[in-house]
Image (tube, rainbow, N blue to C red; front, side, top):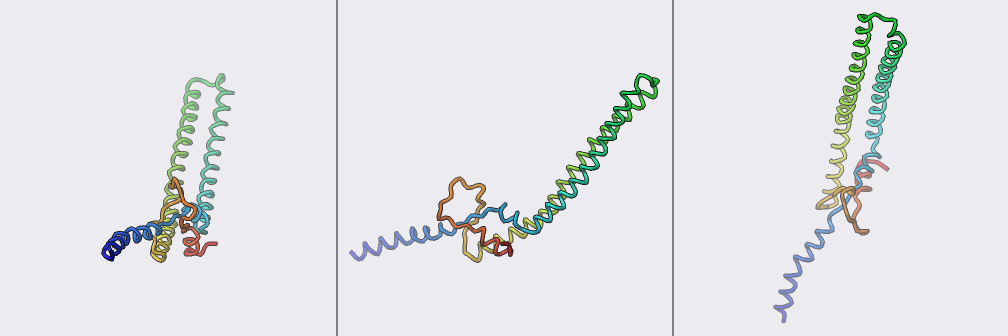
Length: 167
């Protein structure tokens, strides 16, 4: 009888240990933490300022294009063919420059976002790793990808915010 109890205990020990280990999984709302970081707000301000500057230049180019096109339409009947062809070419070049600049601005905005967000992501990843180590979590997963989350699941978001000094 004692052998059976010992055998059952030996069989149940790994099951109990696995059950305890499975509870060492936490989740985090990554965007909630990132949005609360002061660095993220500074990045957003820089990106918005840059976007506004690019948008002002694009608007200026469009206004110039619209004015030249309007002037051309109003005067085209009175212009000789050589001048008409030259102005049409100018208008096409303005349009191409505006489109090219718009693509350039979008590319520069993307590059700026990647450059500014890299240190933020690194800092956040380090904080997540530190919280995981300090609390002996096996995994910390993003809550955005979870299809089901138990009400008793461990939320590491407040722990990471505390680690970063965010309220």
